[in-house]
Image (cartoon, rainbow, N blue to C red):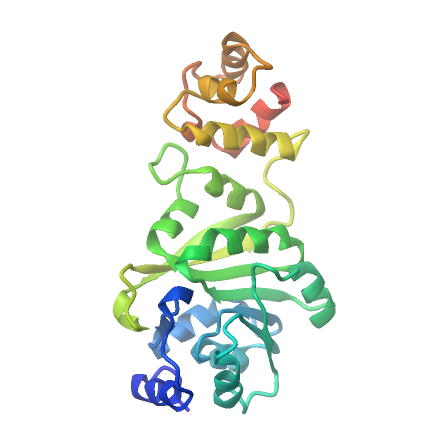
Length: 283
C-alpha cells in the first residue's frame, strides 16, 4: 500500500469511515519525497525512533524501512485499527495509543529501548507544538535528536537570533537544550487536506552539555520569563514589574557591569547574557 498516494489514502480512510479531523489538527502528508527527506534526518540506521502523530502511517512506513525499531504514538483511537492494517508488514513497529502530552518519555525510552540511540520524529498539530516540544526537551537526556514538522512561523521563532522580532523565551529554552537547525519548508499542497499555513521541518540536536552554567538554571529562566512577559519594556523595568527585590539602579548597574546598555530590552539579550545576569540578580 502506498500511503502517500492520495487515492489510496482516501480509499483507506473511507473503508474505516474516517476523515481528517480538524479538531485534532490532522493534515496527512502525501508526498513521498518529503516523507523520505524528513525520515532521513533522524540519523544513521543503527537507532530507534519514536514517532508522534503517525496519522495514516506514511512517515511510519518510511521510518520502519530505515531504522531498527519504531514506536508510533497516536492519540486518535479511531486511527489505531487503520494503522494496524496499513502497517502490518513491519515487524519492527509498535503502535501505542497515548497522548504525547501525558507520556513520560524518559521512562518510556528506558523501558522500550534500553541502551539504544533514540530519535524523535513528529508531525505536530499546530495547536500543541510548543507544549510537546518542551515536554520532549524535558526528557532530552534519553534522545539524540528531535525532528519535527511545525508551522513555519514557529520554526522561525525557534531558530531566531536575539534582537529579531521572532526571538522569544521559547527560543532561549530550546537553545539551552539543543542546537536547532531549520531544514526545509513544506507547502500546504503536500497534505491531505491542505492546511492554511506553510510548514517547516526543524531538527534539534540534543546538547551533551548546556551552553551556559548559571548558578541557578531556575533563576535564569525566571529572569527570561520576566523579560519577555513585557518585551517592549526595558529589561530593568520588566524585572521590577515582577520583583521588588532590586531597584532600577541595581538592575541597570548589573547590566553595565557586563558591558550592556542600561536601557537594553530583554529581547536583545542572548543565553550567555541571561546566565551572567542570573548570577548577579537572584530573584
